Length: 139
Image (cartoon, rainbow, N blue to C red; front, side, top):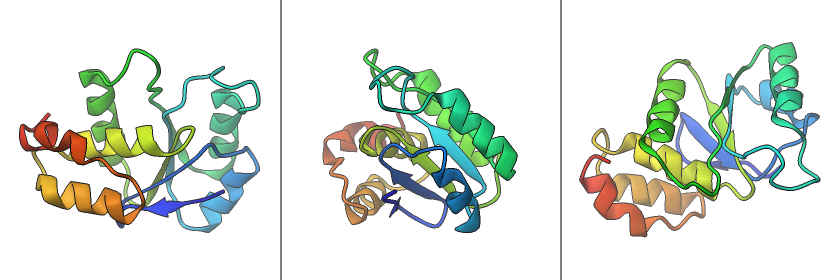
């Protein structure tokens, strides 16, 4: 499991396994956001299995899949609500972490300066400067 910290509230990673959930709890995470649609890859664990492991570990779990339909306002709002509903660090995951970073960034539009959002993502290894116009517009 490769965790990339964006800031004190959000980290992202590529696909996690059910066995990773206990390690996330031990690392201080309070919630998991799954941005990967089920069945995208035959080797990925089903979201329900990760959700069950999260519940067993006492972690909140949010399924906000970003698939072929692309980014939609309701996904951005669901991300914002998920992050606002918990106190503590959250891990969001998808195949590579890029979709999770994108949804986080767009959920911060209108709250944080676009340059700050882009810089935080870059610090975690994600290039999202192409979103700058959406981040400035408040998404």
